[in-house]
Image (cartoon, rainbow, N blue to C red; front, side, top):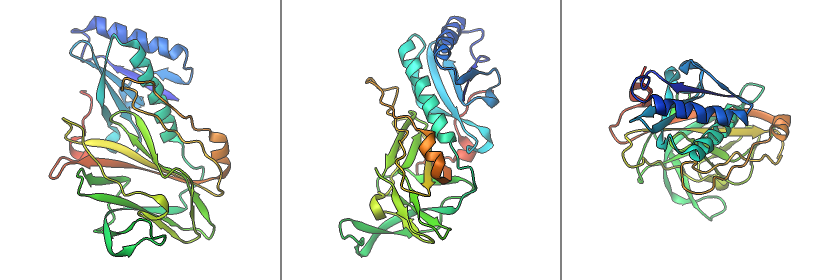
Length: 290
């Protein structure tokens, strides 16, 4: 269920008309979205809405994986008078939160490592169609967070280790962008993860990751989520485009039925994107005023 909160303390005496308009837009949206509730307590809400400069709405996402229970604000904003965009953003937010909140009923049966990677100069991958890669440096995944440098010169890869004696299946790795509420994936099909085996880096269609900051950003935050199943079932992906963009938003809903029947494990971790010598998520994450 999506829980929404509007920050009122910043605008109570400065933009009462904008606040009233926003509350009206949210109430209208909630009438057709029964799986949502309105909360006065910011700490308990998944989505935060904040007004600045009388008519500009900032959207924030809160998730248990974020340190210190903070909320990450999106890069994009919405005009309080643009009801259609506000509704699109809330539709995207509920899809974003629902998918991100799906977890396996049992504990993890595999482990994940996240490395900076470089091209292996010794040769190509097994199928000889793409360059192979090797890790450089330590595992960057620590306490559910990886810190990455935003640079075209730096690539990252994921190692997935199956800790069971059964073949498992990794479904498209999803990246949740808090900056625009979009959800992207790679690759486009499930990949077999052999018993007691490793799936890593650019093998089997997994493409190296590179991260970038938008104009004006000093840091950015996203999530990577991996679904693992016991059989090669077809699992609809939760993919959506940027709802702030000026085109029709496309969404694919995630059906829990087929997924839960064979879901073995889920891993969700935060990607803290910073420029060289930049701030860290733990120290300077953009948050709402309190």
